Image 1 (cartoon, one colour):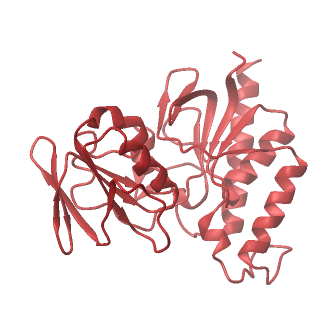
Image 2 (cartoon, rainbow, N blue to C red; image 1 turned 45 degrees about the vertical axis):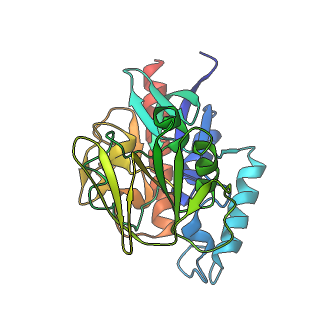
Length: 287
């Protein structure tokens, strides 16, 4: 199929970009999902001393080197956030907002979220808690929605949902100027817990409680265990073997999401391994 990629890479940090480069060198049709800054962790690094060949480089400077490299190889980043990945047998279906993609193999390079799930977040997943507000917005027509935004992109989702919902609360987890509609209520508070019965009923914050029908914690990436159903985890990380293969055939993982040490060079090396193993798998299928 013309719209089916050989490899879908989710993540644009050192692991994801390394995987992309190595897959592109081997003439595979790839799609890379990430963000404009590549990696928020990378650009905030004041100084990096252990990346071979780039001693004493700032994170922003290394990011620019990455940008030059992928531009030279004509690799583009898709800024859509992937919300679900489903193994369909001989291919994977990826849901990103209103768009669907297909890939023969998948490489997860999502990094790691250093924020723990809210109490009750995982318990009510699919019962009022979700990770894509725009995807689920029609389910909350004329209802109350609470969006916990960990980045600026979450503001767009809050604005979109406000067109359908009766009421939208926006709880930002960052400081700045918030570009939200006047109909969206800004709540500067700390979320603590999601509570309910069969479904979500309330979001508990440090200084108040909000009665709500839905809660959307919108982070940079969806937790891997929720992103890929059936994915095996170990100590909070994706479990892989030495070939970066997960328990799901054709699904690989690399970088911080597979465990310590959380180091850029380690991530880049694992990205190369994951890409080479995915390429090997694809080539063996065509023999």
